[in-house]
Image (cartoon, rainbow, N blue to C red):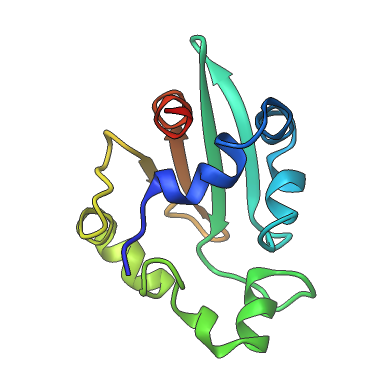
Length: 138
């Protein structure tokens, strides 16, 4: 099963102009209409130098609080490994460039990945949306 950024973002970026506006304004609400977004994952869209960026920040170490990624994993064994990438969080942290490359996602061309190496740190995914908006609209 392949995974592509275009496929992932297409429900929000290739819909109506209202769908796109809702996603750019409140990505969590827009995404929650289609997929569950655990409450300990921060998602945002911001504009930098005239370009839109999507950022998802996922905790390196999850808790089991209700609604968290850890809680979702406890309730569903499949979530111990990412359903799209097929790896665990620790596997991803150790080898994210190669894992993403197997799915055709280039670091840093397609996505920037930053990992906080501190307690309670996050994995930050930053995706430039301009190319994806143009790609899915064609």
